[in-house]
Image (cartoon, rainbow, N blue to C red; front, side, top):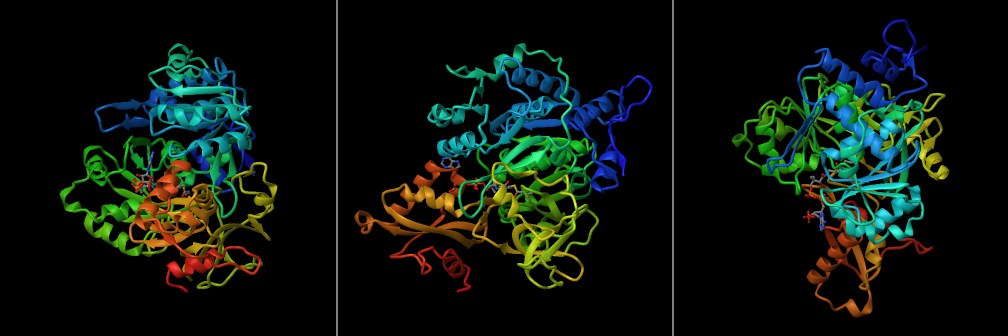
Length: 565
Ligand code: BCO
């Protein structure tokens, strides 16, 4: 394959920039990965140039609103100069160096985008986290990653201040707030005086770019590390064929900044295609505000979890005339065929489902122009070869249920996560013969469409969140009423599935009022760990089903919940 990218040539420029066609060719394995790649320098700065020459329409790169009248609109040129200033904040007063890890736990504010791009410019490894994280969650993330810096907004100050003394590696605490705080550097103050001059680091294509914490059945979340190219190049085709974006489009991707879906839909896929990323900072999700936003702003492309569409189809959608909406997408959890049909009937728009994971991105989808089979999550997308395999790594024939897997060639695809940091065993456990196994079960039909069946393990997928039962059980056991618990999924008409806890009570609590105690336990979990994980259902039981060796049989409880007992 011909090497892509920075080839030297005569003339005004030292090198010819990578074109979108080069990036597509790399994704299609028609060109080799360049040795160096930097999303800020090689993609964002190219769109700035295209703005200057009029090759890109006058559409912002980022359009942020908060519903209270505040608005931010940045072109790619403004994003470029502002993120260079932010990059100088990191390298100069913060003293951070290429490869250092930075925990970025911010709500949907424009600084989140600036800071991520600044990290890319300086070769810092950003680690996004949802602002729902609690002190214990943050402590674990800072300790496990040995992060050198944390960036937060005011909401998280008490939680972070309660644990920073236990994080010896943390050198810099950066606060994004109009107010200053003792012991914290003020991002705003440093940003005001920072220079706009900054040379983008020539990062290697395989150099780490980001770490995402992802929950499993057991233990604490794993650190899935992505490279400069896996996120920075690997979403080119996703932006083009699934999101169907062009530089004239405006995409509203609803995901919280902590999840890879935000990186995919609100950064990489969208900006690779030069589209405008629209952001609404809704303090609390609300269907009326959501629908009003679609009628007020020229959003062409909408991406949201199926739970959101399930909530929206309950509304009288005839009352709303969407300004420019033409393409709707969904992912993060399975979409019901009925919701797809209702959305189409009520809005006239198709709903294109995509399926993927933090580790490998979008691997199958209903792409624009492709016939949709309601209930199916579409076909495998290029360059992935998606198959259904058995426990021994053999491909199963169509119609047979097995594990959803990706065939590996001799080298690991560049768009994969690089590894679970410091966890070679769990990294190795994702490989079965010559396949990467997703941990999800599914069926492929004779036309190559994939149908989701469920998790192969105990992970709960609720409202698009992936929730590890062990994390919820660990929070519950901290409460004096709980002797032991088992946490499983339970069906829910809106959220697909919800977290259900079966709890064995300690003697002093056995005669407590069950409703009151349920609320107390729910409140306790919301305080102990990210509230999205709290058990929406609680059942008090005398004992839990166990194996002869004493291991709790979550599967028995789960099957009972789903009527499969
Ligand atoms: O529903 P409740 O009110 O009982 O509880 C909610 C919140 O009120 C509560 N909460 C939040 N902050 C709190 C708090 N309680 C106390 N103190 C606080 N500080 O906790 C519960 C959180 O649940 P939620 O986040 O589901 O809230 P909500 O408002 O119901 O939002 C609904 C959705 C659909 C907007 C939300 O669930 C959502 O955004 N889901 C999508 C998640 C997502 O983006 N997943 C993608 C992951 S990446 C991926 O899948 C890879 C694909 C390649």
